[in-house]
Image 1 (tube, rainbow, N blue to C red):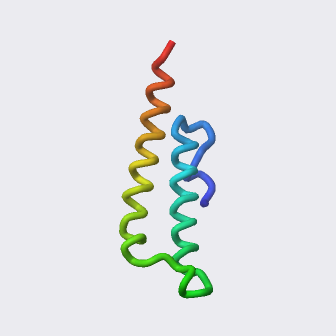
Image 2: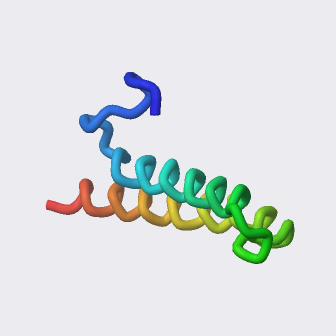
Length: 69
């Protein structure tokens, strides 16, 4: 990732890092050497939604934890 786009000081750093990692993992599955190892288009379409749900939940968990005494 380009320097400056993600800072460890960001309270959502972990969620953003997981999002980036998940997107990269999906990309690598799309370009797998063997066709049978590649994910199909239904999986490609569903993956960003699943990533968003997980990242949003993780970010919400950070917000809930930071507001507790």
